[in-house]
Image 1 (cartoon, rainbow, N blue to C red):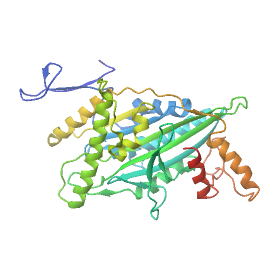
Image 2 (cartoon, rainbow, N blue to C red):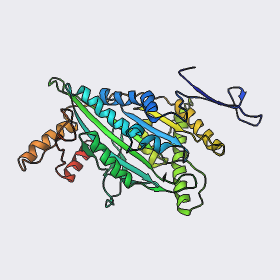
Image 3 (cartoon, rainbow, N blue to C red):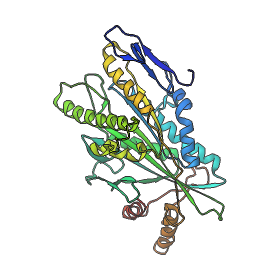
Length: 376
């Protein structure tokens, strides 16, 4: 039907039989051809999810899945030097601030970002600088939310500041040449924007809280010839297999599948909160249409079919007035003003421009560390 496009490839008598006929049939929500521009994909699929994340407080997760060289990183990141060819990540970031600019008369916002890399099952903070050697650990709080202890969060006030941090993080990512891609991402990355907002109406004391996760997955691939690439590929394929297994369990109607193997990899552990249901999720599956990629393409399409069957029930996120970053920072500011009148943290209360931005300063890294641990 028009709302549920079908990819269909007819085969010979030796091909897999689906839906009672020879060949392959996959029913997906939308299909975009090789000539589709990223902005069309964004406008048709992603934009509304970002808007509800910011305005209504629903968690949102967007990630690309596919083999090496199929266009995942380009789809997510695009060309940062060409406004017409921006990827889903910079477009989503811009959309966040577009929504804020429309709501600025009624609501006050506080935004935080983090950028995490998973390389060979090791976590790396991409916003902490190259000198950071802190070992990051995944934890779960008493409410079942998974978080990374020690991961740096940066308060941001405009899209340029966000993109600058993103570019700095990209320089620290692991890339390498493979048999299929001259500059292949050798790791998974998770870019998270935490969005807090509250009404300017003093009688409304609740704070809305949501998270936007934008994830670039490394590509699934066959065995590489280079020893280092082969080691990386082993870890990549293991984590992608874990993700596939989790999706398979979640999409199954078998009531005996009570245990979901989130702990089998760092990737699935970090995605646990989203995949367990409390998020609006968009999965962009990328395909290489060349003849020698048929096996990998079929694997990607099977993943897409299973992912489509996962049912999520996203709920709006709210926190009480005394347990949010707004309350904490306002209290913190009052305390530090007694020590140093120059120290300040600003909230987005008007649309910022590059030349007229109230500088947001984290008084000390240790101070914000206290904030993170207090409100996990």
